[in-house]
Image (cartoon, rainbow, N blue to C red; front, side, top):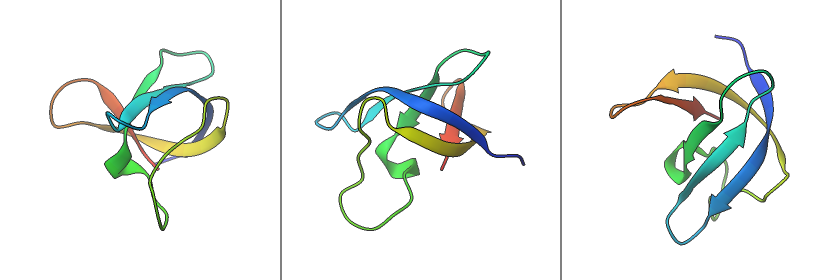
Length: 65
């Protein structure tokens, strides 16, 4: 699966989710559990991120980072 680069539109630390803007497509839902890395799993508005899109267990597309 190819990796996509996007920018964080917004991320709510209290709720643990947000959205990533994807070039030429709709925004992608991101949950804190999909964030890879050590420590507190968060994203900053405007941050550039690289991710893979997977189908979530509920509905819609979500990133696998």
